[in-house]
Image (cartoon, rainbow, N blue to C red):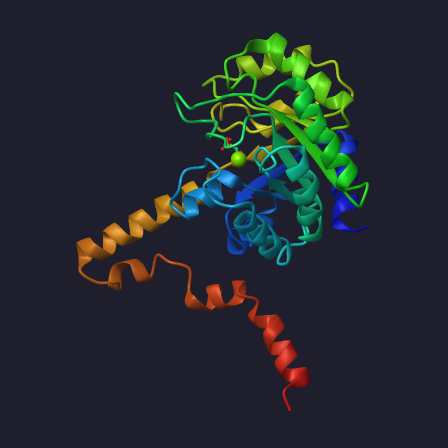
Length: 290
Ligand code: SPV
Ligand code: MG
């Protein structure tokens, strides 16, 4: 089975998949080694790694290039975060095949206006496009994919925009009707109540996807028990872990006036060389360098 078939089968199996965010191939490799089922090609993380806001400041080409680099080093499926699809349905028709060709197994597209503002920021500027317009964008995504196993996940930001449950459910059902393979329902409430109410009200046939950053108390066991969720995405834990670790080490080196103390706390250079794929290069060397 190829990655797309694997992802499609898992999506439809009713079991919970876990996806860890990555902003570069190294993070994706570490996520795979840790046992996550998939990699989340997070726009938030990539923006953070460029130190710019998650607001379509980076071009689709920058994100696409990173997705290609990530997909080329991991064997688990990659779910690419294409934000709003970089424009209207015409833009979506052009970018979706590019993400497919880059090695992603799915895209997640959200129903906000382009350019977007990031979802979890307090007082973010959250404006949604009309339901019909987003249905057209889903149709464009579905019809422009080459492989029917490549998944199109529609994301509604109705709860993020404060529009309430009725609007969120109405949008999600409309997106299912338009051909989406799953619905990502996002919330920034500090408790899971809002998400649990949505899941309870969900009468669609396609599975749900959650990003529990704001309500971390909801565990994988809790989510699996709900029965309607097929993917849990950990949206920004790679970049937050990296920021925390770098800060600690950099501060320690400044405090100590050198690297003697931190050196023993860090992964070895040998470990990094191994993550670079050194074994594969040595095999090529042995076979072909003459
Ligand atoms: C991302 O990781 O880019 C996401 C999830 O879209 S969030 O940042 O929570 O909107
Ligand atoms: Mg995003």
